[in-house]
Image (cartoon, rainbow over the protein chains, first blue to last red):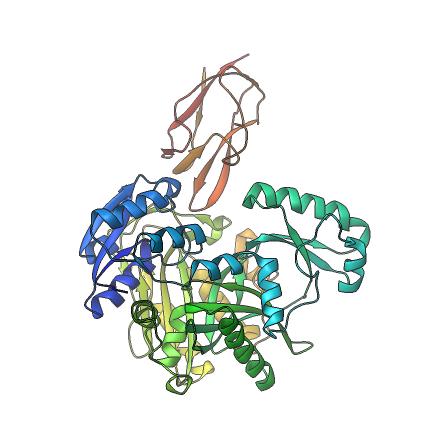
Length: 453
Length: 79
């Protein structure tokens, strides 16, 4: 396959990041941009910009036909979907490859398999990945729902097969509520995802979110280590770190090895992330889902491996073969990522669009900024609120926390409200230092949510 | 005549979802506090409500149109 002229089908910080990776490989870039993004920082950096439609994402970034037309019109031979938007749309991936373009991502079949969460769970079990107790695949009209639930145990969650990323989940604490909740969940899943199937899974209280980064070429699959993304608000990750702290050696080796095995069994190519819930009380990790795309938090893995993940992702798509072996991957130190969003912590985290007036970033060793904005940039109300990510590396977790505190303190942003105060408050918590945090820690700690609690 | 004003910038939708019925149609009788649409701002949805009871006279913004704070979204004839 060739990758000489790449269509970047995304916006903001990840578009900037992809353009940089492509530029370093001598690849020309075309940014597929919506009308309001024509003057964006990513547009300044790209070799060409092609307007794909008006502001609403449904008419631009999510409009597959417009994106494909942009690739044809500009003579691109390849397409990078970034994350979000069309990145996990199997039909789109197929349309891209059907047109003879190189798709920077896994096969459409792998995207489809992992997009169906109940089938993904079955694939994980078949590959020997530890899974939570649950129904064997999706519930059907013949399922003995109460019988299955008794085996799983309460509390449990009803999950939409087509959900994921924290969407389409309902908690059931006792048997009498089960059947009505399944009915509601099926109706909601039909409305939200166009697929009414649901499955049952054990609920884990106070779990940590741990994930494994893999990369493959369809035959060879290796891991690039693990990450912890437990610091979340409304199912959205806020702070991530690599490696995952406080993980027993046997748990780590189990999740790394079984993630590779899952990748092998799916003939996985490109970057992928296998997500696990880790229960510190029982010291068990269990599969929740796999993301078949580049992830927002990929930089923490880059910082501890010294690799450029997007470079490797492009090369494996172009050459069809991994150039790395497991032995080539060396780990060093500890890294954190802080997502800086245009939201107002004092007003219930309402989005805060506007124009960036001042923008001062920190510097020094081990400090990296992946930003989609510069001073003067408009922060439009139409898209995700992520402005930039601060990524900090140091030789140990404690040192990385100290360096992060200094770096966060140097950030100055005016013109829009940001989540900086929350990030600083989270980092200062003794529970985070002691690895006592979990995925509901921020939401159940009123001090962290200030006026919005 | 009372205008329903958008408090936020974003995208105005007349329906709760692509396959759903609109919240209200022109000519409908609406009550104070009733939702006539939503404004999406950075993936969050805020309901837009009428302050008065009356008849929904017209929409000034089409479905999926962009709005700025202070823009008139719709007009209600009180009564």
